[in-house]
Amino acid sequence: MSEIRPQYHFRQTGVGLDAWFVERLVTLSKNLPLQHIDPTKIAELRENHWYFHDGSVPTPLSIIEHARLINEADLSFPVILDSAGRVMDGMHRICKAVLIGRSTVAALQFEEDPQPDFVNCDPDDLPYDA
View 1: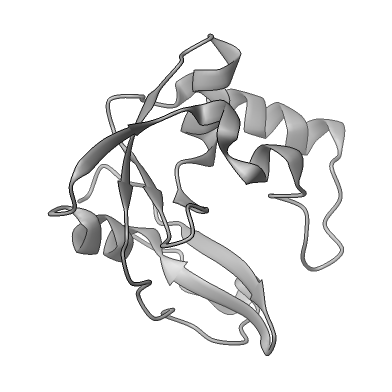
View 2 (view 1 turned 90 degrees about the horizontal axis):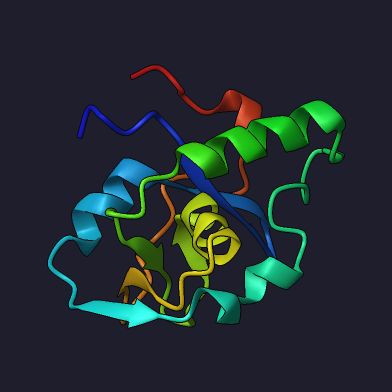
């Protein structure tokens, strides 16, 4: 898994911010059935997906960074969805697919969501070294 940069999926819950280690999600999802979904149907495209915690705001530099990640996104890797169809890994791939006009994108979807790796956490306190 060394080709994946250390990263987390964050989700606001009733107790605070929970985090899932993406490398673990990739491992847990590898045997799920591959499906093809319409990327324009992803709810997070119409929500505040990246700027919802710690007072983060979309600055020009942060938007440039997301644009770079979208441009570099590799659509050969499937996105990972939770049991409700929400993105746990692959939002930059979803954005790229929409941007270039793809009608489908490969996806793996959990039937039962894995437990988070960190509950009620601060993203700045998580380990990011490879």
